[in-house]
Image (cartoon, rainbow, N blue to C red; front, top):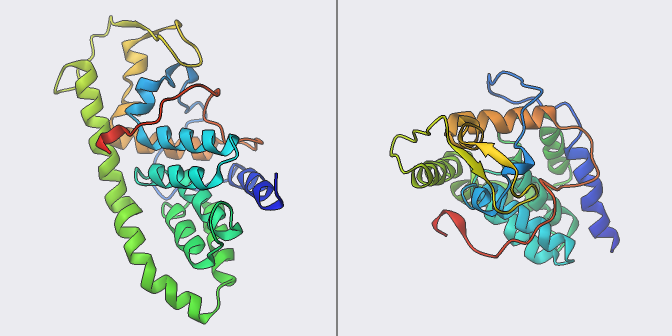
Length: 244
């Protein structure tokens, strides 16, 4: 692997260090997580932020950084700040694309939009490396990327997918789940492990405000690890959830 490719792995270690400070009032929860038993293809199809991030990781493992970047950008359409930070790093280091410090800064600015401390620090480092002309480019080119990937548009896009997916799977427009429902997941890292409907359809995984809160809690709780995996490697067919 090239020096540039190794750099993204080192950056992941920085991103996953403890100490992120979310800008919202979401209460900390040290147990917040998405259990690996739920990370089936069906669940990921209903969560395109995780789905496209997972496919981006798959491309990365296969030595296809250009494809990985495009998939991280797809995840970014659904407000995935982790993927946005990886796109920023790839532009900064010229991994799978020509290096462009202006686009690197804009993508890191997007990633830091919610006020996660370490991303804010990284964003300021990127800014300090820009000259006057490059900073002018940021002002000229930044609004177009925000219009496509900023939380103001990306969060509603993700929320629509969550609501539609939950309604389709429960068969209820209100999202009602029979409390006695039990499920045996047919694929995924823990196939055939029984889970209850209450576990699978927890508000934290499907209700938009609760889902954003869960994401912030996970960012707050994350500890240093040498990986960008969200679950065990598995076969996923290429396709576009969320009506893409």
